[in-house]
Image (cartoon, rainbow, N blue to C red; front, side, top):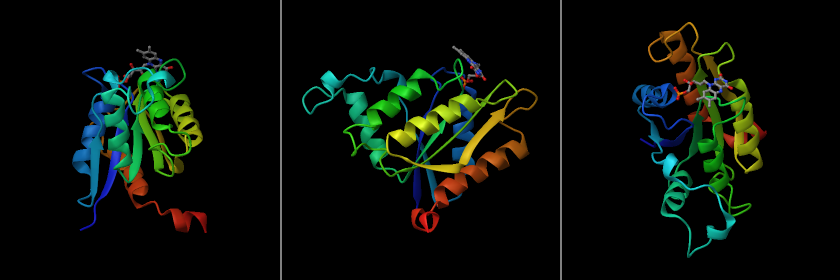
Length: 183
Ligand SMILES: Cc1cc2nc3c(=O)[nH]c(=O)nc-3n(C[C@H](O)[C@H](O)[C@H](O)COP(=O)(O)O)c2cc1C
């Protein structure tokens, strides 16, 4: 069986993160031919700095992030929203993944973003922000895989409808076919 690997960037590094737990639930319920790999350690990746973005000085955490994403078939951000945009930890990861210019680990990778916040909007500005930024960094944004889930009146970690909707988004990303999408 050929497996499609999805690297997941979680936009919250707090220990009790709903979005982190959501990523874990989606990993555990994914189809057998979809391998979801949550990338740990985003909080240890230093702020992007061009001075150290070279073969000699590249921080180990940034190198690891690049390798993990380069080795995946797809990239999914699972993120809350901070002050109407994506959290800095996710923005920083995208910056590292956007370089070298034109050849970063995100270039040409099908990319989606989902997440939940306890507001009626579910983090939609953060998700639009991540889509715009990843697209500029060279990712192939899969528009159908942008799901902003309100966690106001529902437990997103257990609600069957929410998990089915988010699970479908993961499946669409896994099955995304560049060639037929371009035709
Ligand atoms: C600094 C900060 C800014 C926030 N700004 C927003 C916001 O603009 N929109 C929103 O929907 N929620 C906002 N929130 C609430 C988060 O969505 C909420 O805390 C969420 O549970 C965080 O996700 P997590 O559980 O995965 O850590 C903010 C929270 C923090 C700490």
